Amino acid sequence: DGGITQSPKYLFRKEGQNVTLSCEQNLNHDAMYWYRQDPGQGLRLIYYSQIVNDFQKGDIAEGYSVSREKKESFPLTVTSAQKNPTAFYLCASSIGQDSPLHFGNGTRLTVT
Amino acid sequence: QKEVEQNSGPLSVPEGAIASLNCTYSDRVSQSFFWYRQYSGKSPELIMSIYSNGDKEDGRFTAQLNKASQYVSLLIRDSQPSDSATYLCAVISSGAGSYQLTFGKGTKLSVIP
Image (cartoon, rainbow over all chains, first blue to last red; front, side, top):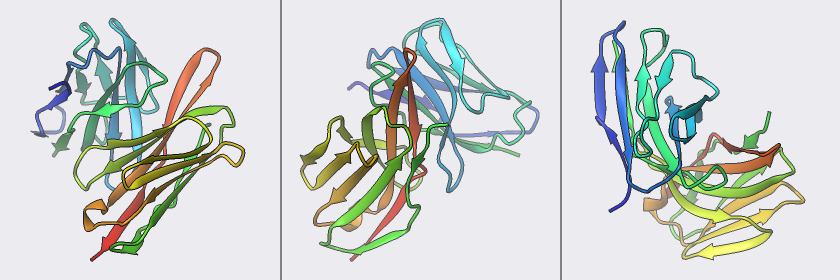
């Protein structure tokens, strides 16, 4: 079955450590996205990529980094510079910019 | 700044009733509209897409779009307790060769047995 796989489902880290969240899709979608969702809050865009080897900052990119070396993969690194990293992270993909997003199951990151 | 507004709720309806969820958007040239359902602790799931004025029906769900009023709604007929979730409205606007997808903050629906 085609879909978007995020791993791990839960992730625990100590403050000051960088951590990388995985996102893989086999939908052959060109565009991929990372969102953050905090309790009771809406979705906030971190980074997006419309094509391999290219990506753009979203609304809250500070403290995060991404890469897009393969069409299928769009990993997100949460760096120690991110002041409040504890959140639910959602990866999504779409056929193109004007198409609906399809989401992975999310990674819940807790930093203590 | 493009905005998508939803009443945060909670909206409570009895089982079997019609639930009506509303969404307004600020950008007149918005062209694509989506409704997502998000259960607590889960990721959003696309349930409806609508692109032109009028109604679009899919099972118990009906999306209604009125571009003149910049308003899109989702009706859920014969509401079930399993419909209890947060519903997100999403709008795509285009301009200068690019597209922007904006999400509302969601309306929490509670269907009471």
